[in-house]
Image 1 (cartoon, helix red, strand yellow):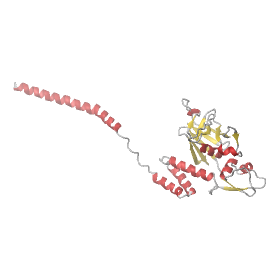
Image 2 (tube, one colour; image 1 turned 60 degrees about the vertical axis):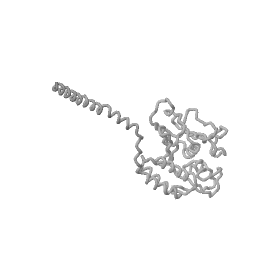
Image 3 (cartoon, rainbow, N blue to C red; image 1 turned 180 degrees about the vertical axis):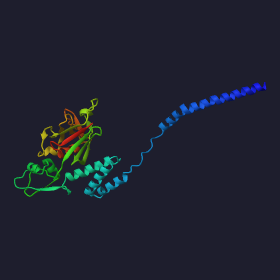
Image 4 (tube, rainbow, N blue to C red; image 1 turned 90 degrees about the vertical axis):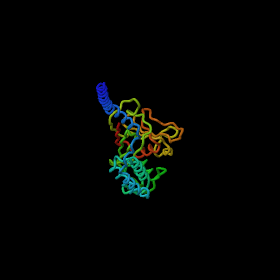
Length: 289
């Protein structure tokens, strides 16, 4: 009898060892990884690693804080070129846009600026042709409220070679000058080509600025010499159909947007005004999906 109980006990112990071991390995192989994975998913995301370019960005912003626009322009342009993947690169581009347009649209000194002295018989359009710029840009850069010129009047102008890159994915219009970044503007409304919901996405396309149209508040077309030009809504039409850049009403305005019938890219009123002055017919344009 004693031997029977001993044998039974041994069998039970062996069974426990065998089945217990099997259960343990089953848990380790199948259940534990799932439990650990579930715990990992429930954890908050780890903080991103510190951006190593932050000190460089702070250094690039110092001249701007001190009011030295030229030094800030050089420092920010260098930061953008050297740190294309920085978390601060978009902020740097916005600040560089502010500096570049401020210098372009004013009489503030810059090394690249030149001076045209008005001679007898000069009119604004003739001066624009001579300086290879536009009447709109000459008026804005020199703070002119009319087209009348005076003999010996000094007109400041900046030689430029603008081109445009429109990224539908990033919703941005980027202006390059002599191939380098100059300004960027955000697109807030897309109803153009591949950007239209449900429409097939098209590849990279190239074209040119076809025209710049200014619409007065009463809906009529105006030109740079009209008093209503400063308050106009702008269309910058491109040779790529359906991609007209147009101005949206200011935030809080009850005015309806003046959208082109073929669709387009809506930007802020200031952005549209800047682009209409900077760009000319024939300006090269690239549209990226």
